[in-house]
Length: 427
Image 1 (tube, rainbow, N blue to C red):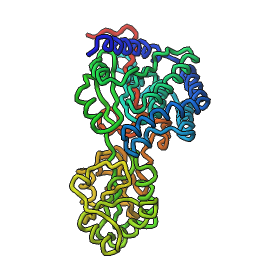
Image 2 (cartoon, rainbow, N blue to C red):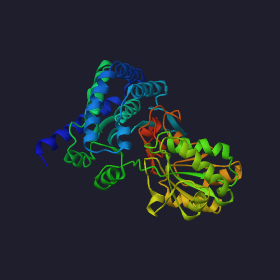
Image 3 (cartoon, one colour):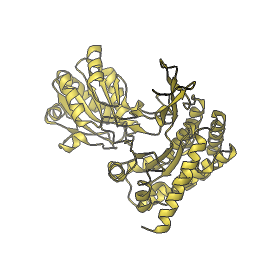
Image 4 (tube, helix red, strand yellow):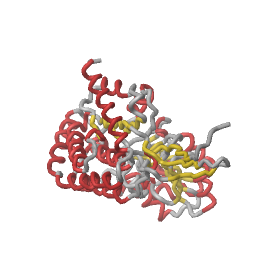
């Protein structure tokens, strides 16, 4: 690769490491001052941000980006204000750094404390959504971590404009400008270099499509927290309240289908399928112009055919697909056991929900479904740091080590042991 580019990326990482040591001991007041300044600057810069984003949208349309990706890329007045509000939510949250997790007094008099501390330098590799630039920078700053942001080429103008606002906010609070840095190129070679700097970068978080996450995981020498795809299930149990199931399913599928927590799969218990499926299908069809395409197994297809409702035959691949579109795969199951087994086999362990009036069935589903978030009588669309009261989120981890589900401030920290003695020596 280009030697100059390799040097640039290494210098960026070295600066981030130096900044991380200052941030680790920065006061809560200083961090909050920077965040409040950022929120104000974002709101004052709405026209400029929309103009920068328009360049990305024009390029995206020319490149043939899908409607789902264009939606993820779009910044408008409401979404920009929501970013600023997310930053203010983070300001209002307790600073996790320095929290005492455990304290032990040993027989020899040593006092051992386990304290929450920043991870250090976190690299965020992401696609499409420019709001990630603000969400991740704000969360990492509050939790005392330096951040290296590497957005996708489709959002380069938007991300560059947002990164400039972050630098201004940091300077206003006398914090190092290198605490948050945007990789100044979308060249893949820069990413390859970044992923090998394990002596300077402590964690990598990829956010985007499956191909990006696999590339990062396979090429990184730095620990990776994966924010994998969202193949999310809604299971309508035999004891479901259909008056509840109808709007819940419509919300989970239609409110924002491009989101990773949108429903992609519907399971319906055979005992209620003949009544439930036509009702649910009609609700989905009337939810928007053009309705929702239903890709059905043979049992659900037969029920919808008898009701004269549109559908298509599903393929095996449809049952494990994150459509990110107005498409829903549908299956009929014979039991709660089959529903649980199906979710555990075909979901991406992201967000799944059961609709039922039977508490015992709900508790079994919640206990046995092996996903990061498992709901009872609620839409999967709530899997979100803001909705969970975490402020903005850095992503939704589908990993099992360190962090799982929406990652807020606490999940961006590690811990260390601090030991106080009075001259003890080991015999």
